[in-house]
Image 1 (tube, rainbow, N blue to C red):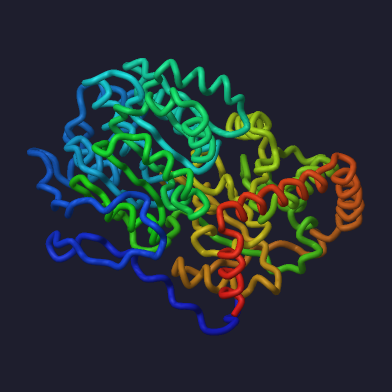
Image 2: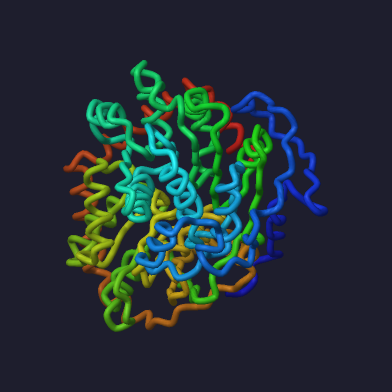
Length: 490
């Protein structure tokens, strides 16, 4: 693409709280009320345990027990990733940890393995509470904990919205070893049932996975309740792909020895990812989408994820592709939890080759066979672009991303290119061949829009929007968000 102006300066490298040989750096916190009372000054972390270093080449070198090493071997985990090499020994040594690493770097095993090792040494009650921003991530984390802890017969409970609360409360009363929850649902159960907070009175670990999103200001009240219900002397583990002010502030409040690990500089995409674009008018996006999907077999593409900006677009494309005879499933927040899980499972098991999704699926989900990511809508922020395309080209495999760029997206795409330090390459296709199906697509789009009215989606969307605005207003966040949008537009 031709240059549309001066490229914006890429964001600075996320600041490290340790520098100059380990001296803690003083940094002003944001103006939000702290989630925890100020602790005594933190001690600097000690040297790693004997025999453990950042260059450890096997899981045994990290201090893991024989059963854990054997489990890693069974799961084809041949050697520790950098985030695992650095964080596992620190967690085993009792440190609080903030780990920053890109998507697909093995962050889950970096905290799950040491938690399970400690659990094997002192099995009782709710040993760890893991908080994650989305329901799909919660179920995925539970699967990974069960796989890594298979020899321990570890009991996991998933506590998320969209499922029966009474059943979840009964499950918690059975004292599972690991509880994996979304902030809203666990906060509700902790607040409404006086017996449930007692279950967490001896919890040893609190984990915030995708911590930058969990610490979003919209979850502040939920986190207050959670922090009040877990012991002050527990270990706090924060893992994220992105550094934010809230994340930094919470880590600095650590009352224990704390360790910070950063695996990358800025937002980067992997070398095995081929990043392409199509420059096109808005009104023919659907025509190009059909053309690309119809050529998947010719392009040796087994599966594709299509990212859109809104639930409405996601639902509309789902109906449209069905009208056009293209097999696809969709994943967005307006669907019930059972339907979301069913859609994800059908895609992961290769029953359906195409998954339509909002950014609810852009972070953390491990779907190893995605060959193509399509940005039907360009994300507003470069970090979201990186997370989206990170669904493909994972674990050294090759992958392709294809972005539909309209004239109004040019500034956004230049910001993305400046951030990742790479230019997108034009995707070659014959326009006259693509536009052969324009009449068929337009006719199917009209039918899809009528079906959206008939199935009540628009009315449900209005109700959800009013409910969301009411919640934001009750939390005092509505004015703040309006102010932020005004500042962004000024």
